[in-house]
Length: 551
Image 1 (cartoon, helix red, strand yellow):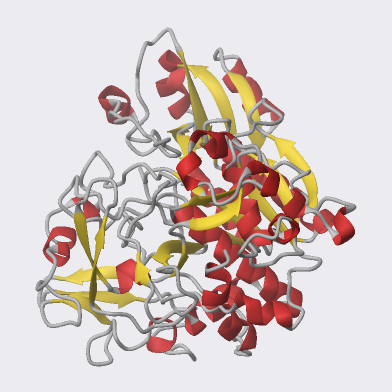
Image 2: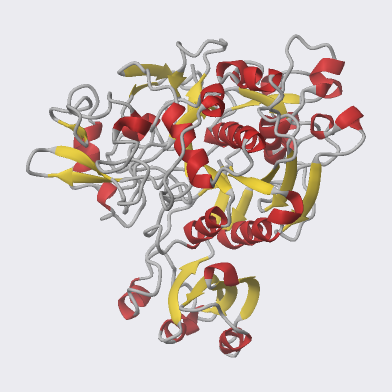
């Protein structure tokens, strides 16, 4: 199985951290003092040419300007890091970390087919896909009569203009594929995306192995913001991620997605595939990837459609990463969507060639491929956001997020058991607020919702706080959030009543709906564990596209 998100074990640079603990990220390696390291430097103000020159004079080189987050990406001798950290104009230095990539059944299950019948198909909406290459000539991404491509812009940020990996093909097809290849080939099903007439702005931030770095992703985010008005970019899809190493308030990836959100772009991020990760004894809790740990963005976990068009039998995918987020304890994911065994276009891609068992049609019939992972769930929500913005162009990102969460289906079983078809291992999932968030995406319900938010109201995801006195976890809402004790929508508006205790903000504990019985998740995540950010190794595992999915 090809790993789309693989991370080696990162070590602390003890000497550096001791020298400047508040300015140098804990995973920034000292390494060979004579070698260069790739770093992202955040300044206290937008860096000027003089700031760049000070680093260049230290033997560094500028890789990317990132003024929109007061930062720049540089290559710099490791021996000069402590000196740079002492610069009063520098606020924080982090490594340029590695980042990797994380419908015939799914569309009716989400009631997207109803939306399409009423004419909501994403027309006029631009969706920025930050991923591997998206080929403009893919038949399912063509426009009217197949004359013009709906991939209206293509740019690479990794010094390789194109690749045939296929992850970007698949993601773009879930968002905006029109199913034309399956129709022309007379296949038994039409593999159509959620918003089949939306435009794709393809920003290549991952290479031919599905790998990239923080700086390439941030450069892509910056370009999407710059091109927003040119291509009406209203949605950004990030089916990628990496482990959390610091608070979202310091993480450069999180700072970048926040700027996109504030620029009026709905940012949708895959939660990660660490739900089975018990490395730190958390039973998969606290494994949300960055930048999905940011409270602004919409973070999406994965469901299984069970190969039926009804929603009532759908179950959580056991690999879907669970919250709360490491260090900050933000309540994530925000909602869940189909992500297991999803069919989308993979025409002439490396993935299509390498995994014949996952092919749904031969290459002459469009090259459809079945893949699994939260990488496939995120574009479901991106497509839904495109439909909502086509219907109501003046919706803000916060109102899109709030409506999606409020209208999400909240009826789940208490537990379910999944079997990995490859290993035969079984996994038990508990349907709590940190597993399914506000619920299961319901596109038609979201389109039908007409609720509004008072001026100045946000849809920031709340924070989980452990109360040692009574052994419960309480949800703490921002003062200006759409939900909470004093908000117009109330605590239960987004999450329903099942995850709360007796109407209070308690969401987990010995007497709450989700407690110590069943799984050991509560004790593991809320004891003296890495959920509180004490460990030097994040409780996160590589996000892979699971080629076989799970039963």
